[in-house]
Image (cartoon, rainbow, N blue to C red):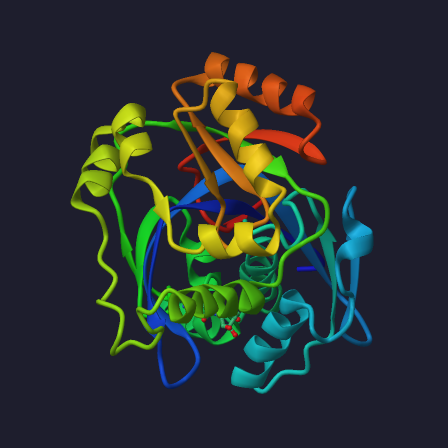
Length: 305
Ligand code: C5P
């Protein structure tokens, strides 16, 4: 094989319940992921050395060195199978960068699956998921897609049944937010409010039964009533301008407005595709964001093209 392309979706967290900080620095989560139809495409070809290129409107903001998760994924698979990662990886990027939509994680899952196919390693699914978890907390979900509950730091997945399609609008903010910085701000706000921030201080995070039921029945209004993101206050604290974006989407008719993951992308749930267009138009007109994207989910995870 001389060339393999994998398509990988973005995600939105419909519930992100954050427990206390653990001794290892991570937070236990009840993280309900939904894969949505914005995709990166990862193409790998044999090369003399590991190298990386990226195209797309945000390409300039993607690091092309060894810190890129796609490169780390190729190295990790190579290391397991005693193989030099001699590949060129091209990322055709459509997922907002550093936006809380798991774009980096998508590229990692895509590169992993693509290298597995290119090299004919045929690693068992369980092993691919293990490598994904080593690469980052959100990477296993990028591989499986659909909808899933993530426990632990988000890497222990249980697939969820979804009874319909949910229509979302995403408002892309200027610049990114660092995930560790948002978690640290969440801890800081908890300490400042007197609750403490460790796993001894904060109750174990649990998925909302109402939210799981809304997903199962495909009921957008019920889902809107149940969504929640414990990182939202921290993201807004670091980026107060997000309040205006959230308000603009709500005034535009969104059923629910929330920060996506650690932000700064904001996510707006709509009743249907027509309503999503209206919300998108209101967000564009508000001038409170850099770009507006419409996407629905669930969609499949990393897929060989
Ligand atoms: O796992 P990942 O590399 O994506 O995590 C990036 C950072 O986000 C971690 O170093 C940690 O600061 C924070 N994080 C966390 N709890 C999680 C997931 C991520 O504190 N469950």
